[in-house]
Structures are given as C-alpha cells and as structure tokens.
Image 1 (cartoon, rainbow, N blue to C red):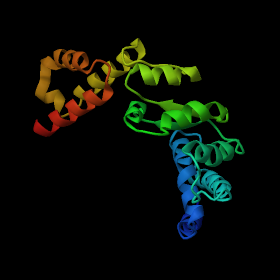
Image 2 (image 1 turned 90 degrees about the vertical axis):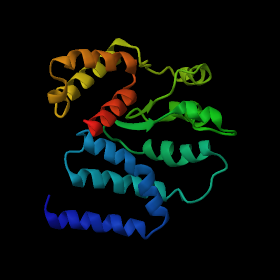
Image 3 (image 1 turned 180 degrees about the vertical axis):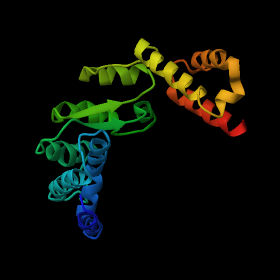
Image 4 (image 1 turned 30 degrees about the vertical axis):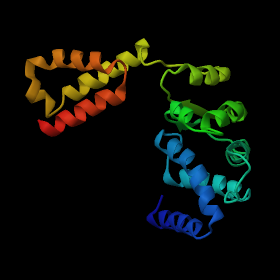
Length: 209
C-alpha cells in the first residue's frame, strides 16, 4: 500500500473524530479491528481500516452517543446487532477481572454478558478472566465456556516456558549462571499458575540487577 493511500485512510480517521457519533462508533468497533489486524487475519493496513470504517458506520447509524436504559440494551444494539451484520475472520472480545463486578451494585458486566453473549455472531469470541469465585463461576458456566484454570497442565507448561525463556536472556543469564534452573523452579512454584505474578517478579528483579 502506498504512502499516499495510508494518508487518505488516516485522513478519514481524523474526519471521524470531528463527527462525534461516528468517532464513538469507531471506538466501539475499533478494538475488533486491532485484534484481527495483529492476529494476522488482516494482512495489511487497508484491510484493517476497511473493517473499522464499515463497523464504525454501522454503529454510528445506531446513535451510540444516545444513552440506553440499560448496559445490556447498549451492548445488544451497538455490539451484537452491528457485529451480526458483519462477516469477518475470527475476532475476540477480552474482558478482564469479572470478579471485580461483584463489588458493584446494580447491573454489572457479568449481567450483560450472561444475558447477551449467546447472541454474538459465530466469528466473534469472548475471552474473560476472573478469580475462581463461586458466585461468578456459577453464572458464567451457564454459557458453557471452555475453562482454563490456572492450575491446568497447559497453563502451567506455558508459564514454565515463559519463565525459563526470560531467565535465559540478559540480564538474568549472567546474574544467575548455574542457578538459573533452581531459580526458575522457585518462581514457578510461587506463581502457582499466575502469569501476572511471574511477570511482576521478573520486572522488579530486572530493575535491581
């Protein structure tokens, strides 16, 4: 794609920012385009912007700036109805920390997803993380999800490979020497399947080496 074409598409994106409702629509659908672009489903920048343009215009027609009666109504009108009108490669919606919704009063993201997620189009998948708290698990299990507990063998193997790969690189490699394997085992044990714990330990350690 030529530089001039990039400029044309970027100019179009700038115009969206001036249009209010269309800008909000671009934000609502934009994350899907980013995920698909970086996962390789979109092979070039133009494909990604074409998807963003099509999705944003579809959402804009639904007046996304208008307040809905409930979050579930907004999700259905802006996400479900729009994405069901599109035919795309597999995309993801990622929702982190569902358990934090239990600290809120009124309608929560868990309420919205349990009610609306079954109507998402087949090409759009939902990935959610949560602590293993029974009130949350009971509700999301009504969606028949594929569960990946922190202690499952696949996750533990991924974590082990991640930690050992990080420790094999500098500055850890020179600092640890022959103690690398023992150190990796210790971090793996303390992390107990939690990638964030391992990442934070390695990040802090890197700063003090």
